[in-house]
Image (tube, rainbow, N blue to C red; front, side, top):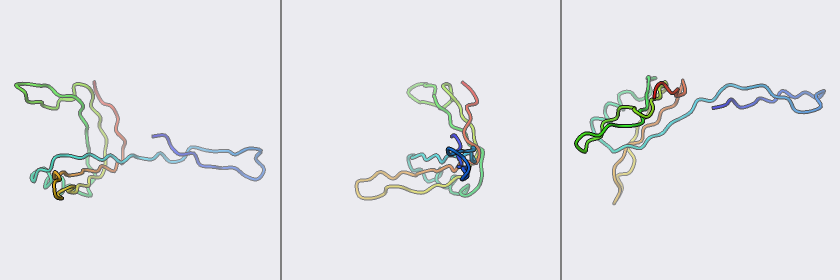
Length: 110
């Protein structure tokens, strides 16, 4: 994400002037099917900085898809948060995982 410009204009400038500011890291949010074991694993990591990766693409064998990143892989670093979403009447129980990035995702392969 491009850094926001910081205005440096003084009264003697004929036009506004800017310098690059600090780059913003991103926050990524994913909604997943709720699974007690997966939730417990992620909840144990809550508030800790972790190396994270996103794999796009999967191989199929016998109707089962296994993520393998054959289209692209991205790696970054960030703080993990997880909470339960849904669980109301006629709602599917999901969990939402949020990554507050400290190092933005970089494409690493494919």
